[in-house]
Amino acid sequence: MTQIIVSVAIGSLLLGIAVYWFLQADASPKVHLSDAREALGCLQSTFLPVSVVDRVLDYNDFVFVRRQKEPGILRTLETERRAIAMYWVRHTRQQMRLLMSFYVKSARRSSGLSAALELKLALNYLVFLAACNAFLGLIWLRGPFHAQKVARRTRTVAARFCAVSEKVVALTESRAELREASGQQWPAG
View (cartoon, helix red, strand yellow):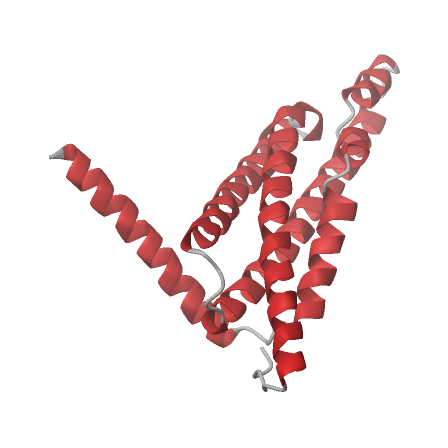
């Protein structure tokens, strides 16, 4: 009996998310293929490099400043790094939303996307949002220097999402090229 309840709950959650994305897609501005490609490139170049994450959240900076026994400098460092980390995650979520918006709009016109690819993209997006929220919560509660593990996990999830998104963008690009070659018109989306 509990397996049925869990299955129904998961199905309802996925249906709710699909309806939410459907309703949001109509309200959001149009996203073009070039916007999706730009968002993907931005994510891969500014969020995913290990050096960026490690530098912003470097615990050695915290230790060095703490040894100086200047509480004002330590507070300033924590405040600035917290602001940078939170901005970084919010910007990344915005780029992910842009990619999901593109996906939702292109999925309406596409019969070439498999259900497995769609499910993989949706699950990776949900896991990414959960990881971002955990990361932001940890930064807010404990500070940026105690969030490196969650940051690495968030980066890993974002990399998986980008890999799946790249497949979707590539499929959409190839379909658009085929349509142009055959002379068919495709509504802008």
